[in-house]
Picture 1: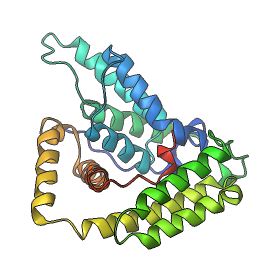
Picture 2: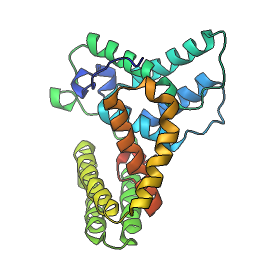
Picture 3: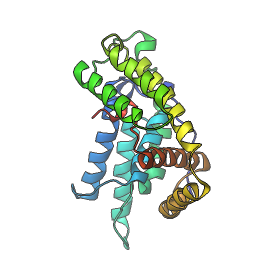
Picture 4: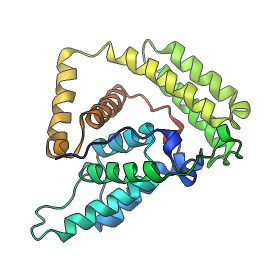
Amino acid sequence: MAAQSEKVTPEEVAPEEASWPSNYFNYFTEVEERFQKARGTGLFLMSPLDWALVEAWKNAGVPLEAVLRGVDAAFEKWRAKKKRGQNVNSVAYCSQAVMIEAQAMAGVAPPPTGPAHGSKPSAAPFSLEALEGFLAANAEQIRRQEGLVEVAAAVQQLASGAAALYHDLENLERRLTALEDKMIALVRSRQTDEQLFQVRRELDLQLRPYRGKMTAPQLAMLEKQYLERQLLESAGLPRLSLFYLR
């Protein structure tokens, strides 16, 4: 039976997890490395479902430390079983343990720190040149797609003003998120019923073994992230979030 959990808000994040943007941009890399280490193989490639789940945790404000602890706890429980069955092949296997750890941290977290509470913002984990290149390349990729001229122009404008935005990455991330939402809505409106059906069927097949480990809100968030990821990938469009500037 899946553990009942509530969405963990950023205000509940412990100080070491509220260091924006450094921990924000390390989120996926840290989870990927911890999962590979716990699984015992560095050759394992995370699936689109895994990517979507990690992004869903990030967007929900689940502390990175809670995810890392949850991965370790899930594998410890798996190794303690007398009959282990097949290997753990998805981060989704750890979802219940991650939510338990997130709830535990939310209950003991001290008052948060961060820009909104007077602390000094963390330094960007990438250079200004890397940011400019990321935005310009995304603008060019979007420009090639029909009907997305306005989105491409907006991203190009951000690229041109990257020097001024470099010291306020949190605000830049909000702008990029809004543009990505607009781009997704435009692309989704062009999909046929058959295309939507095929993507949904693939998602259901991948999620089937793990549905019992997640609550309805967790599943809804994961499905949203997965469908949006697949939508942009099939259209040959980039993710705009700075989370993907790696």
